[in-house]
Length: 76
Length: 215
Image (cartoon, rainbow over all chains, first blue to last red):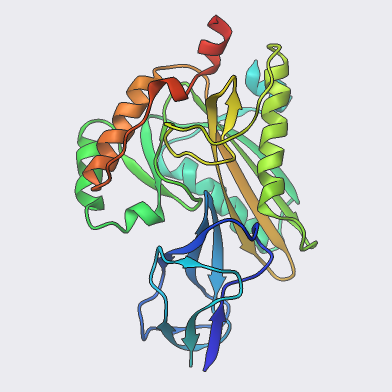
């Protein structure tokens, strides 16, 4: 299993971030590099890319605050 | 005059609905693929519509709220950048700036700074200046609003896209040139309340370039 990590260094650490949309359902097969979710920070969106190919397991819901570097899912 | 002051020699594109909105994404994808220039500035208008985000589009009430808005003459389209809902219409000028860099420090803050710099250049023509700031009571509020005299003149939003070894940043602004802010607020409020939100916005929080010139 490969952890899906929130990217670091893309926005100010004090800003609140959350996954605004998951683009795949739990259990869907995703390809490495695919955009699997959208993270929203204030009015900016950032792509969350799949770090590996395999079945997606989402471990965090949309609109729940997330920190940079946090694990939000797994693939494998 | 304002458009030419911001970006001399650039034609203002007359957009049409979702195509005009999606063109920013097409440019961003192209940029991330490594093709085309590293820097693009786009000035464009759109017929009246509401533009919202994927976040709102995922709400259970979205289809019904969109249908009602469309029936009232305000079709609803979805953009890739963040925020809530805004209006496009004659009298609102959109400014999109896209940048590509292989330097990791190219971040979204620089995208917003570029928007502010262009708008300040345009406002200088009229002897005015602007800054960033959240404005309580304004729709689609955020700390990167473009503010003149304490009132929101333009809303901004952005998106970051990665390509092979490159980072691309899209930042765009919807600038209220003229027209009725009160009517804009009414349309947005009705849509957001139909989505199940308890939205309330203040007319006094926002302004247009025409209003500023008249005062």
